[in-house]
Length: 276
Ligand SMILES: Nc1ncnc2c1ncn2[C@@H]1O[C@H](COP(=O)(O)OP(=O)(O)OP(=O)(O)O)[C@@H](O)[C@H]1O
Image (cartoon, rainbow, N blue to C red; front, side, top):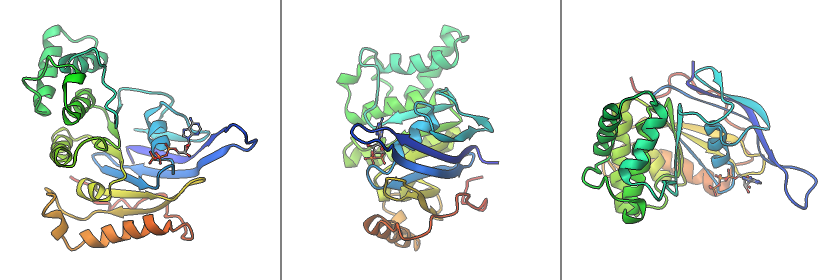
C-alpha cells in the first residue's frame, strides 16, 4: 500500500469578477511510497503548491481525498512537516529555539534533558553546531534553510513536504545542501515529496518525477522513474546514460506543454525504483 494516496482530488477557487470558479486541477490522483523521494515539476501556476498544501492539511480539496497511512488527511499534523522556500522561521528565536519548538511540540512529555539532546543531534546533523545562539537575521540563506530542514527532520514525520526549498539559495550552497538533504533522507528513512522548478535538481535528488500540465484544470501528464544509482553526485549524474534522455523528455514537456497528450495513468507500477 502507498504511504500517501492522493485520490481524485479537485481544487476550485472562487475568483473576483468571475461567476465560474477557477479550477486549479480536477480528478488528480497519485501515490507516494514509503521511503520514496518524489519530485513534482510543472509550469508556474499549475497547482504544485496547492497540491502540497492540501497534503500538508493547510489547504483542502474541493473534491476527493488524501490519505496518509490509510488515514484521511483533514488538517495539519506532525506526521507531515513542510519546508518552505522562504524558510518560515520564528525570527525572534535562535537556531536552537526554532528547532526546540518543534521537538517540544512533537514530544510534550519529554524531559528537558531529552529535548536538549534531540535538538543537539539535529543541529549537528545540519552542520550548525556553534551557531545555536544566532537568530535567523544573523544567518545566511543556506543556514536558514538548514534550520528549516533540522526543524522538519527532528519531528521524524512520515513524510517531508518541500516547497521549492532551495529556490532562494545561491547555486554553490544549494549543491551542498542538496547533498545534505539526501544524506539526511537516507539516514532517517523518511519519505519526501518535493515541489521544484529545477529539472536538474529533480533528476539529481528524486526516485520519481511527476510532471503536471499547465493550468487551469492541470493534470498529471507523466511520471518518470530515475534509474540512476545512488549515491549520485552533481558531476557524475550527468555521465549516466539515462540522464540526458530524462532531461530532454522533461524539457520537451515543459517547452511544448504537451496538453494534447493523454494524461499518465494515476497509479505507478510498484516496480518503481524505491530504495530498500
Ligand atoms: N487562495 C487562492 N485563491 C485564488 N486562487 C489561488 C489561490 N491559491 C492559488 N490560487 C491559484 O491556483 C493556481 C495554482 O497556484 P499554485 O501556487 O499552486 O501554483 P504553482 O504551480 O505552485 O506555481 P509556482 O510554480 O509559480 O509556485 C494559480 O493560478 C493561483 O493563482
